[in-house]
Image 1 (cartoon, rainbow, N blue to C red):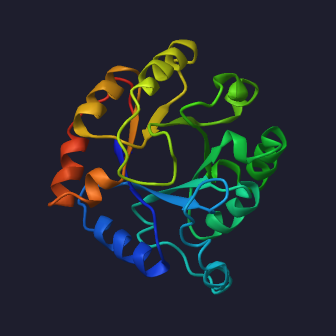
Image 2: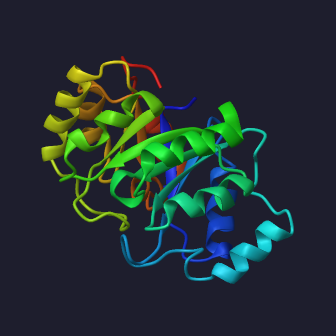
Image 3: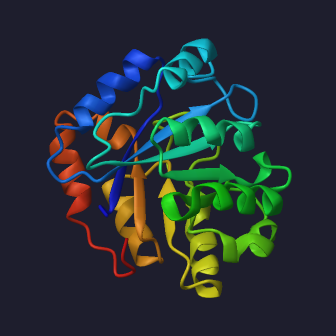
Length: 232
């Protein structure tokens, strides 16, 4: 699996298709993150919350995400109904779901239900905001596949600077749970990435650092050349 997951925050289905077509031209890509924002848990709302009927129709007609033979899609569910939205995205082709711990009221019940249905076809991670109490995930730590630390104060908006407070949170978590894979989403530049990888991070989610680059493929490759001592 690649070190880096380019991230897209779609404004429409067409925008999503265009961004994924771009990522499909990356020669070494193996995973992509799609950010999903409902406008309530985080804002502003992104697709498909801006066009729920369109998304429902795509699912009903058996449409899926492209390049499923070589790209694994991670869905960052920044929404209040993450436990319900999960099923639709899994039908759409996702194989990894990132759930914010505050968004799923009964995570301990939700996770076994979905695992029983989808088995090992799906990986689950918990996202932690900058101010999320780390103790909130302790009772579920054995049931998840990875933890995603958010590197920015306001989730759901790309292009924000990295919050340096996150580094110590990562170090603390990694010391306590050294076997749990950690990825970081938000504010990840090449310089920040080097600090993250040295702190225990094994995966990077990069949005504007790739999409707003003059040469997105070269930007992706520059991140990929960084090595994590903790694996991916």
